[in-house]
Image (cartoon, rainbow, N blue to C red; front, side):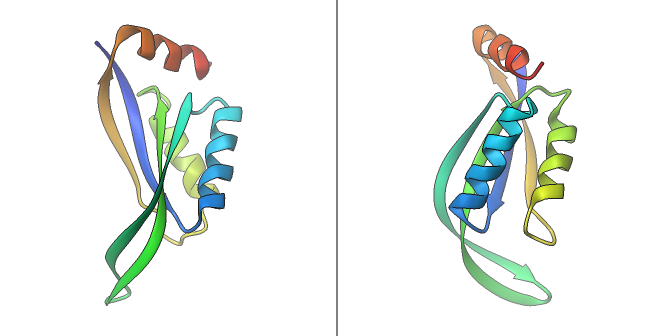
Length: 104
């Protein structure tokens, strides 16, 4: 098993998630993006409890690129405060190699 990083990100629309995901793969910051579809989010914003439909994406990258990828997504994101979570993960050696090779 080898280390990779997963970034879980929510977006306002499916189109924004797909556009951002495709660009991150084209820019070689992510090897893959899984578009996980809509979810209902309940959150506190500006001292109010809100509910919204959001679209989730899971980005696969190397641990070394995780912060750069998060910063790039944040720069493109439509939210004032995008929720970008970096999760360390273990992957099979072949998958980790593919992630590494796809982000060079």
